[in-house]
Length: 433
Image (cartoon, rainbow, N blue to C red; front, side):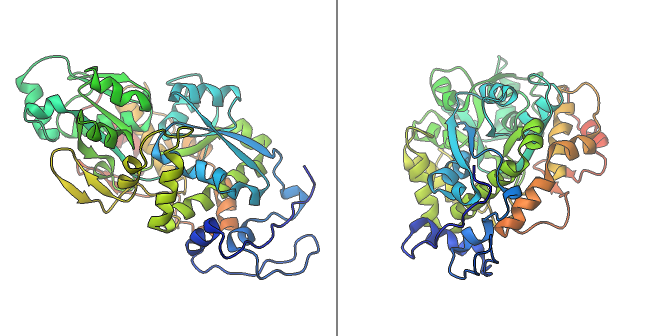
């Protein structure tokens, strides 16, 4: 790796990626200061201008990084950072690595086969505390997306009059049997959304139902053969179940928590310690990709076309695109334009690794008995969420930063999460393990 990184040449006006991504820069058009003695360049593409590293000490320590992903719509920013060549501006080459399960992602992160991954928020925290797998110090570098997951119930339930949580509760009270619901990883986001939604409707996920773990791409096939009554998973598999007429959307996760955290760019603490510049470069490249995706409907279409390929999500482009654009149908005749679809950037609001987000997952791990005792919620979040690395990358890419490392939210049951007393919050739910 050379000690100094060369600034890329200005891209032509007809360069699709640059042209589409440029509006996301929100007018930040500053001249690039001299780099390695070069004269000021005012014509450099703004994305390049914001991200070029000058000194050798700033150069990534590891020029090639392998980033794992699961075939889901929200892997898009990692994939697009690579396919659009946005990684090159920061002196790295991202190689996306398609993985079969979240357990596989966990193991490959822990043993170093993957440098980083598109990964469940709660999985990273589970590994940090030694639940749901081996214990190892981990790092959340950034949030990849908000919203865009769904709880899907089987068409067989719909035939019995189930259309939402309340009618599911009524059926389960009326017809006693084993009800099975699938999530994607025991400490992961989908397990927490599923349990929270069931509990908000008076269904105890630990006593009234059986929870099983199924990898995302296998959800639809398992429902088709009757292995579960419902599942919570990321898109496009909720939409796929509707298209295949085997299930319907009972609830979107953005209805459970508007603008909830979802996937992260995760790695080990060891990787960040050894390769801090590389970690920053990864975040910067993915931030640029996030800007690109959210900049326009045409960019979302290009993204959907890209990730629909067999090497990525491997499904029909339209199945991905509709819900990316907020065009929803629930499979029971209702259609709507969702005001809170999956977002990847949203003027920078998506990507900041809020300490309170990480703390929330810990409260739910405690609520459902995955943690036997209260951890030091804030201390764990400060250790895992690398706000310092994110802020460096945000500065380099012109990404706005929030005023606080904390945020609040009111969830579907009306309970407010504000991170002020996480232990009391975790213990305050009527339904818990």
